[in-house]
Length: 275
Image (cartoon, rainbow, N blue to C red):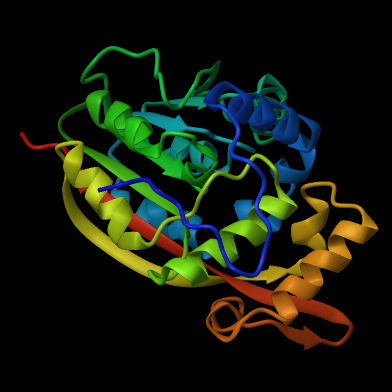
């Protein structure tokens, strides 16, 4: 399946960056905002975090890899249920913040390691479970990343993936992605769920579980996590509130008092490596 990504008609998108430039943007953007992500309620207390643990059904003898751990929330959610968690991230600043967070909570069975999600430095078949939560849309080559996650799974092991998703309509997908790119220059692309399922299947995994949901976002918190200034916030607010009909239905913007709230689509997929 092609990775071609359509330009939305309603926004001017920047010229695509080279692959290594995109990774450097991720390092800078998330390094500068590491503490905001550690303390983020969306990342630390979202229903999908508890649901991810429920779907994975972890066992006490498991070794778990959490790819692109960010603030460490997924790694820490699994830590009480398994033998060991290895938490990786491209940003050393983000890892340092996550490790401090783990220390505050008294967690001792999580190891933090710098690693590129598209070139995981682990042997084949070395983990019982691999998790990847709200990160895939930052990868220049998501198909390659998923193939690498499948490679490090043991036979019978499980990959559980959570990420933002967009409607299958190409123009609507382009519009939503352009809004995300404006807010966060390190954003690459959010896909429809069916594309993510295809990548998992191509990696030799069998999709066993899939569920979609919408998560509620507070506009100010969402923009502040990426350090958006006032002019950028105003443009983002306009693009969400005045979006074309299909994109507006996806965002579902509304005012609650003086706070703008909106929605983002999310999917949870669990896929197993055959025995």
